[in-house]
Every structure is written in C-alpha cells, then in structure tokens.
Image 1: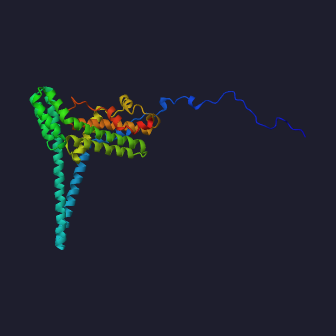
Image 2: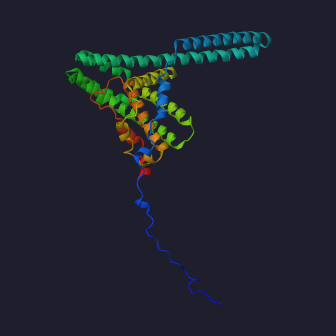
Image 3: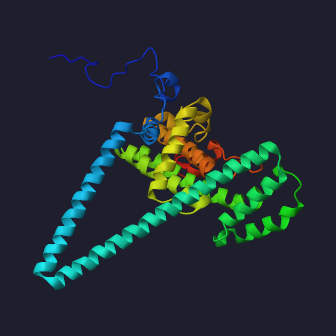
Length: 336
C-alpha cells in the first residue's frame, strides 16, 4: 500500500490581495446622516401659539357657567337639607363652604394683582420706547423712578435701586438714563433669567435625547417651556399667576411663530455643541440639541416680552452662548 507524502501537513494558500483594513474604509457620506429638525419644539410652539376660535371660547365659557350654576344650586340645596335634618353637621358643612369661598376669593385677587403687574411692565416698556424715540429726558427719568417703585418690595434689588437713585440726576439724556437702569437694576435680573433659560434648555435636550417615547418629549418640552416663561416673568415682574402665565406663554409662542424664529437655520445648527459627534451619529442626540437650542430661543423671546426695558446697553443674550452653557457636560463631554 503506497502513501502520498503530500497528503498530510499544513497547506499554505497564497492570497493575491490582502483584505482591506478597517481604518481605510471610506467615511459615511454626510447626506446619509439624518439632519435634526427640532420637530418636538416646533409642535410645542405651534400648540402654545394656537388661539382658540370664537365658537370654542363661547362653548367653554357657557359650559363652565352652566356647571358652576349646577354646582352652586346643588350645594345650596344640600346645605339646606342638611341643616334641616342635622343642624350641627349642616353648620359645619356651611363653615367648610365659607372657607372654600374665601380661599377662592383670595386666589382671584392674587390673579388680578398678577395681571396688574404684567400690565405695569407693559406700560413701562411702551413708555420707555416712547422716551427713547423722542429722546425725552424727563420721561426717561419718570420711567426709571416707576421702575424703582415696581421693585421697591424686592430685597434683591435694594442695592441696584440705591445706585440708580444716586446716579439718576447725573444723566443728561434718555439713553444714559436707560443705560444706567439696565446696568444697576436689570443686569442681575437678566443673569437670573438666563439661568432659567439654561435649565429649561438642558432639561428639554436631555429628555429628547434619552427618552424614546413618542409623546414624552413633547409633554416635557411643553411643561418645561411654560415653567420657564413663568419663572422669567417672576424674575422681572414678580408672581405672574396661573392665567397670566398662560397669557404670556401664548404671547411668546405667537411672537416666535410670526417672526419665524422656530425655523432651524444654519446659524442654529452651527452653534449646537460645536458640531458634536453625538449629533452626527445619533438622530436622538441631534434632535435633543436642536430642541434645547429652540428652547433657548423661546427663553430669549420671553425675556424680551417680560423685561420692563428693551435691551440697549446690556447685550441681548445669544442662543449660542446659552446653549453652550446649558449643554456643557451633557453632550460635549460625551463627544470628546
């Protein structure tokens, strides 16, 4: 029996060409990378700016009136029958109703006072614009004094009010008066309002990037923006009230829609985290950063609406700087 000497042992197979290395693979074209559009914030702004029709306002007004009448009559009949059958229990229940009515009156009064403060801020803004346009020194000084009266009860503005009062007579034109008011009185309030914008932008960006649920990011963005606008109003004008907050929210959102400020442009995309790698790899992270930047735009619009004076000497906050501070350590550190 014969054996082949070449039937056993390792066999060497020569390849004509070596396999390509991973690092030599071509890059993915930018066209295939999904571009973030900020769809969540666009939906939030649209919802906030939508004004109900006259028919729906009549419907809800009449419905609430009918329900209030039914509840009032039912409560009155219940109290009357309870007093007739169980006098002591009826008197106790009557006291509870009286307390509820008292609390309701207090809430209504606070809401009216909040509306009054918002109207005062609006009137100061209009008076300041008129004084600046006419370069009226006396009108400008009156606006500055009214501004000090507006913040007279706030301890955090005591030093600024004192400095403004000392330097008011040393100003000789309207721009100088408003520059002094901005520097001494409004600059700390601008910083506090910017902190609120940064916090809201950070929250919206994080939730959009990390929560995959369809409606969770929309609800979070809507709640965060309403809370941000309310807190900005509190910074500049004190407590805005529930109804006042909704009114401000609708005014801010309507302004953004009318000016087209919610459109995602190249300037916005270039300012987001310096072109973060995460934004190029993951659509969720890209959407989160864009939604955070759009929230910053809403916050800046809210500052302009709630601020008693228009930005002049003090520089208007920029979306780039607010987003950079808000998202520092959230996305940038992960992309390094």
